[in-house]
Picture: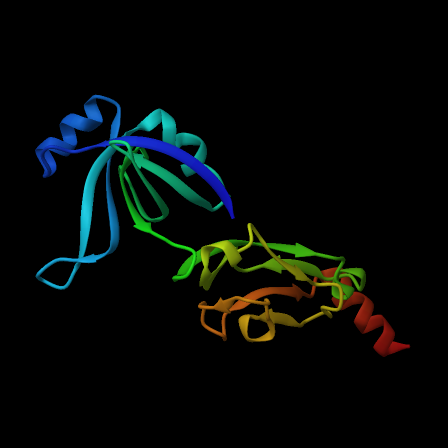
Length: 199
């Protein structure tokens, strides 16, 4: 996985009003959840804020990053788990980060890249990609930047499901019945098949 570095400062106050003031100053309110748990059994969070300008490249990108967070001089490694955007302006208004380490497995969505020229496409069909990301579980250092899926042998009318996939060192967390891609018949391929039948 790619790495990205940002720095922020702890928030003195929390709540909607305080968050609104931070956004006016060009800051994005964030929480960092770690393994430490409070009396209620829920993960404790560090409330902090990051300048929005630091986040653009990381947020508006198809890549998935391990984030080197520096909060008031303290270093943390984390992944982005939840992002909130304004419903009308699409401006980033909040991020939840989850702390990671080299031993503990995390579950995260990784982009899918189809490789090869499908047999079904050579036969006149059209390749359709149904999902752009798959959720995988592994320690973050074992997680690749992309999941490459070879479609060379994918025939006309056939599909690749999650159940058909296997990546070394990774557990796929997306349900096994989910279709990743398929080759669909086109008008031209149906016409060609009908002509062959007629002959």
